[in-house]
Length: 362
Image (cartoon, rainbow, N blue to C red; front, top):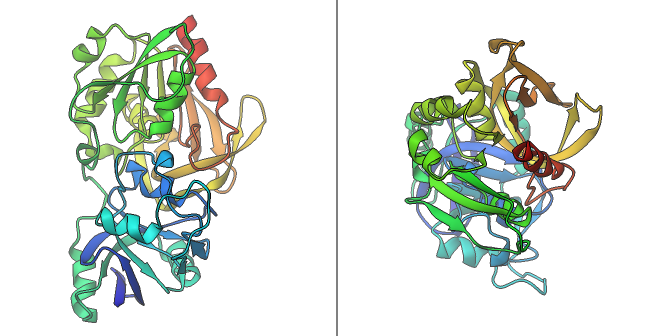
């Protein structure tokens, strides 16, 4: 069945449909990972986005539900060059096509993903629509242009948990050393797994939780999770984080990092096409070491908007020199733009969880 991708600038791509049927809008982006498509599909940070995989063959090892990063796929749509309908892996439980169909996610194959990626790199990430029900060029382009996009939009409310809970999956040392409060803006499961493995009791609360509610648990530390969209679109969270800055140690990841920047009084801006993949080089300015990291973000903290006497730049992206990490000079607070928990991706940055543990010991 024919399927179409229409971009807001008028570019049209034709392919073949797989997965669910229908029509969806979102911001079209690309991910450069060679594997890990299941973790990418279930990463809540992709809410509102149509993801293009640059690796040409996707689905060849099927779907294993032990590897999911949330309770369901969060992408608006999925674009691949070639879908493998036959999978081979001893852990595989079903095909990628079956999984997307079961979860109502539209997919398109047969599109020239290299041409699409080159176009995004030149023109920037943009609003788009994918459809198997509308084949009219002008109609599709107008739907893409009139879609809401990401800027100023609160997507966190669509992926955060409904009520507080304690994370209990995975192994944990016998001695629980700390209680960590996690504000869920779309948290990936592997962040929670890493905290539990480090000997923490992991208490998760919705993004709407107040500062008083968070402090009532008497936590030893606070983790601000990853999540989708524009950090400026959740002013209620920024206000909560600002009230907690001098109350306990804080570790921010991805959207959590951006929200800290705003809580510090700074600003954020939208990147041309963002960083999405498992091969982004990041330099630690404190040690000189370079880590290969997993990333998924379209917005960035503007370090020039922050007081250098209070906030120190700690990490930069070696591809474009943008901000990848910072720490407060006076308070026990640090954050990174990338994903130290990986899933998918390299494990170079897992030491940051140890640094968070050490911070809570002081």
